[in-house]
Image (cartoon, rainbow, N blue to C red; front, side):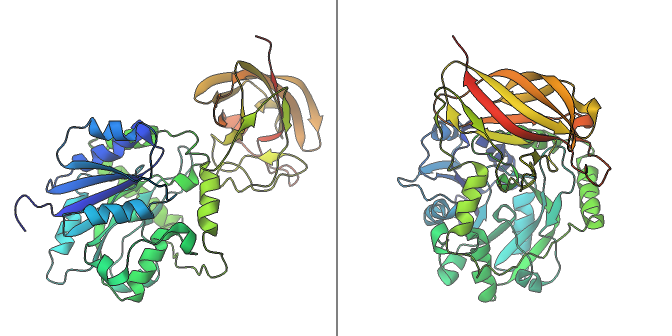
Length: 421
C-alpha cells in the first residue's frame, strides 16, 4: 500500500440532513489518523447536502449522489464500498460523532498479529437531551460476543474483502432484520472474527429514538458533543456515563433477537414512519380537529391514549406532528390534562423551530386531575408537515403519585383553524 493510498475508506450514507451533516463530517476530518478518505453518499438527495460537502474543499472528501432512492443506508454503503480505495471500510452515521482517536484505535486492532475481520469500538448511544439512561455497546473481550450483541455501524470497521465473502448490504425491503443487523448476522454465521478496541470512541444519536427527526432535522446535540471532545473533563464524564450504564443494566444489552415473525421490509416501514420520513400533509382548508390515536412514539409519548388523552413518556421535549399545510397564521387550541393544578402555567412550545407561548383558559378539575385549554397562534409550513415541540417545565414533567393519576402531562384534542389575514 503506497503512502497515497488511504488506509481507511470512511463511508457516510446520508439523506435529508443538509447542513446538519457538518458536525459528523468534522469529527472525521479531525481524526488523529489522517490517512483516510471520506466518501459521502447521498441516497438521491435533493437538498443542499451536495453543496455543503463540496464547500469543504478537502481532497480527502468525495461526494456521490445516487440517482434512485433506496430508503436506507444499504445502497449508499454499497456504492461507497465500490468506490473505496482503502483496505478497510469504516462507517459513520450522518448524525453520529467520532472521538479524535477512533480510526487510530481501529488501526491498532487491525495491526495486531491476530488481526480480526471486524474491529469494533466502544459506543455510547445517547438518548435525547434530558432523558437519562444512555446505553453502551461494543466493549467486549471474547469473539463469541458476535453471536450475542448488535454493533451499530458507526462503531465498526471491516476489511474490504469481507463483502466478497458475505455479500453486499441488502436492500431494506428484502430482509426481516434491520439492514445493519442483517450484515452482522451474515458475518457471524460465516464465523468472521470480531475484536473490540476496548475504549469508547463513538457517540451515537439514534434517529429512531428522536421522534420525527427527519421532519425537523437538527444538529445541536452533535455540535455540543463535537465541542465537548476537547473539554478537559470530557474523558471523566464519558467514563461516568459508562459506569452509570452498568448500574442501570444498559451496558452491552443482548440484542440478537429473531426477526422471523416479521415480514420483509416491515421494520424499514416502521422506522421511516417514526422518523417522519413518509408522513404526508394535506391543506388545512377551513380547519380540523386532531384526535389522539395509538402510535409508537418511543420516548416522547405513551403508545396508547387513555380516554382520548396521550401522555408524555420520558422525553421532557416531546414532539407532535401536524400533518397539514397552510399559508398565514393559524389558531391552535390544545386540551391539556395534568394531575397537579400547579402545572398549568404558561406552555412553551416550538412550532417548526419558532418559539410559541400558550396560556391556559377554563382550568377545571377532571377525571384524571385537572384540565384546561391552551391557545396560541402558529404558522404551518406551506409544503410539508409541521412539528410542534413541547418544552415542559419541571412541574409539567412531574407525574402524579395516586394510583389513578400516575401519568403527568397529557394532551387531548387539538383544534386548528385559519385566522383572518
